[in-house]
Image 1 (tube, rainbow, N blue to C red):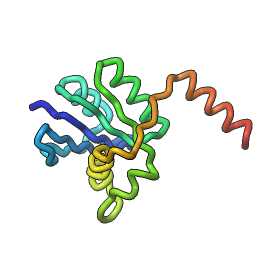
Image 2: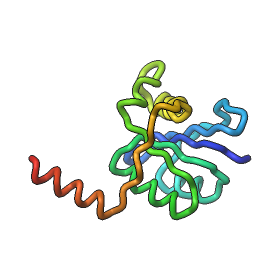
Image 3: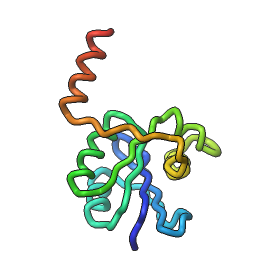
Image 4: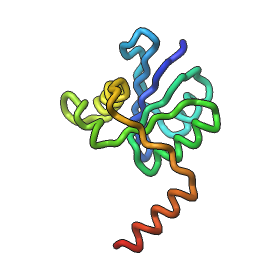
Length: 127
């Protein structure tokens, strides 16, 4: 099955994913560990991956870009408005899918390792 878009709610150990096909509704939901997520992303035909922009999202963005998968990192403050009920990992993954369809939300570019290191240096100096 070809998933056009997969939303990943990032966490430390367990990741919640929701995938849609060309017809639009969510056709696949999973809760995966880190090794399972790597295997899932490496073996599936995925058009685009959507995540909230954070430090680990840039790592996964680089990992996916190396495998020719389009990546969209959305600003968390805009995704929050699309969470319908209580804030859970499953609800966050669904909200990411909804927010990715909004034309007015611009994705954040994936940062390189050097850019993230420089950003960390600036934050340390500012503190």
